[in-house]
Length: 441
Image (cartoon, rainbow, N blue to C red; front, side, top):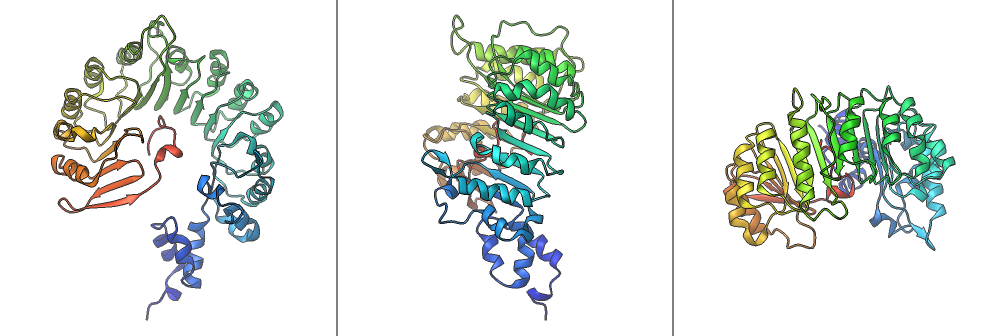
């Protein structure tokens, strides 16, 4: 008779890859065989977020569990520290000690994230002992000494620096020179001290870079970045913040034949430019600039964060990239039904659309999306303060858009089953873990 005790362990491990959340520790309590099969999955990611910090130390942290059971450390691949518990406005020293001890034991870490800059220094010594670390995302408001220790990490392939201080930006060219044979993605978010000279020195060492994302860095706008991409001709994804639309763009345009993912963040410039006209003007200039390249890039994914989406912008977007677009995100703006209908008809390969869903005008919205024959995922980009999309509204969307299979609104994921039968799953929104401008897998 077949039982859990004589099922191959590899089969159990494969089955448990489909489980997540509280199901994993529950399964571990079933039997010794289940326990052995679930441990690699259970300890693959050490995640610590706000809900955990609120219950610390009453709730044991995953780092404390690793410190108590070092034999489980071999299974850890990802460490994700999004917040830390505090004691009198200071990071809890006990928690930091637990994390440092656990990280030192985890020799197979491939990705590390720490969203609290004050919590990072105790982990630097342990991170320098890892030789498999490929993804690094840190809140990088560091001192010179701390920055020097960070740039000693030499195996990084995907680097994200949030709120980086001048101390680290000053060392960025030195770091990229070390990483030139490894680094494929560079993301710099809200680095106020980053300037064009430093970034050019850094990019000069990265001719093989595939992803470049520079967002919220006031001294590096779209004109600067489009001039600097001459150092990175193999780019596949690019994100930038728009500035003064009157700034001249490089002539002739730098060739980006492999570019398929573009994200633009519009930050309205100071007076005398009126709002909100400069934002669409800058985007129109960028689209025209890319179209003048020979050969012009054909975008498969586009994300725009802007205050308004005038019909002229949508029309130019469709003319340049309509036949190839598969994923479109229009954030912080409402899209008119005429523009939405034009987008639905022209983007014959559109699979994912992220846009504000007007709950009170759902019927014309659904009618405008009906021509989208390939649309499978609709993401509601309405701010959380707006009215929620209810089950009746989701059913209406499924009825009017035959190809639609998934509707995501906040932390709820509605999935079409058979006919108009739908299922609801609750997940935390991706925004907490992924920058909006980053390419979706």
